[in-house]
Image (tube, rainbow, N blue to C red; front, side, top):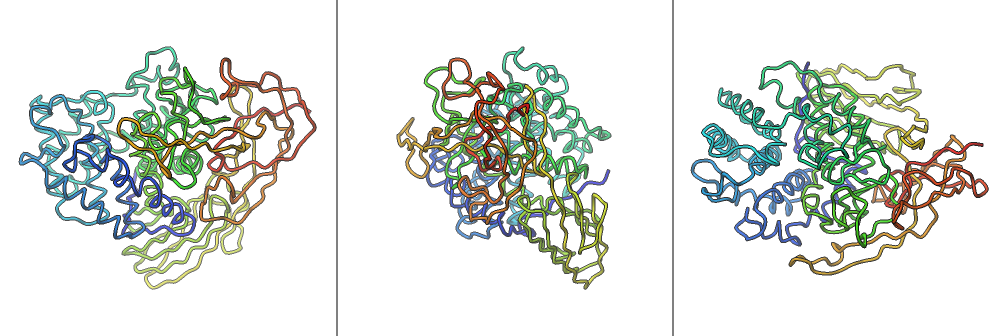
Length: 605
């Protein structure tokens, strides 16, 4: 198995709709969190009195690559201020977290694992030469404390032990010392082996919610073998495939992720999934593809990134949900018991920090890390892993990809070879009628060998056919390439400004309830759909002006509400008998439809 390597934000730059999306993020919550949110602005990481654990590292994990991808000098300077303070406060023995020595045994070292990974991100973006030594000392100290029993893995650090391997690889490539391999072995021995908990994946409601059923831990652990097997001198067995299959069979959502509000929640279309789980699942898929080169992980990454990620964040990226649902007819605070398995009443609202602030800090890594995954390299080869609009400028070549994918399936590559190299272009499994420079091709990967000095233009296009996919409860969902489509529901956005626990919510980072104003009780009257392309705005996944819609035939049915709720639809319709004449409606990309019905029945004629 030959691993692909990531480029950095200094070598890849977003273009087209991807750059527009990152600009929205920079203007929104992620780009301003250090100005408006006390847990980042006044964090103990920078000498304040607020949270000194995961929230600043989570935020930096997305904010740093965002700043460098956009070459925003103000954002870069703000990120540097945080990194400077963190490095300045590193203890003489290497300990780096804002925790006194006496408290180390009870401090969950998930924060050590996370800040170590974030420092690798900072180095890859900035080239800051303080980082290699600082990270060496962090890991050597961690190794000592784990070896002599001063600290041990528990709770979050136990479930996420493999995250440390990103920083271990960074240090090992520069200092291939045996203690680093021993550190991986200690972490694995003390960490959770999720293969021992597959029974929870299969029947989550039979078990009390635990770390092993927590959706973010589960999204993260899929990459555990990919990032650790070589350190452990073990053959790669693709354990992630079996785990992912079981998760999707028993908890899967149509957008490639699995329910988890907060814990695995089965196959109901009205159970939610957490935003942190979405971005962490994307990060796992990125590493799984890099490790294996298996295109299934790239296609799964696209499915999550183009659907689940934009669906749960507002158009202006100032607010987000904690939990999203496939069939989501209302986003309001539950008056009493929420539908969620373990989350609070406000988890479906769009706001500053609904339910819990982890997603407020963590959601920013999604789009920037996707952008950096567009191209990868190994030996004398470059692969376009994700066909999203971007420019790669590296030692071997400059490659500019112009495209509106996933909304269109037309791609123009402008290539200038600086050295001899081989370019590979991944073609998805759903592509039909592939053409390269006008010539018909039958391949799942385009391979071009270029010589130094070559300048070439490559024009690629293929067609995509809408199709119905079966879902549990005899429901259907509509797929169009990597996009899932849903019936959008019009809504009124009700603004809520207030202060809670000393944290202010005010426009544009206030809370919102989305209350439905249009009908949603439909079934599909036909299994044929017509795509209609529209002009894209500066909001790529706009809830008002989607760049692509599907025309569908539907009829109203008696769907009904979930027992004891008026803001949640029933899991399945009360009746599948048509109550109206056939109508033609527009389906929106799932990521554009903030209120939506995604899983509908196909009615008998």
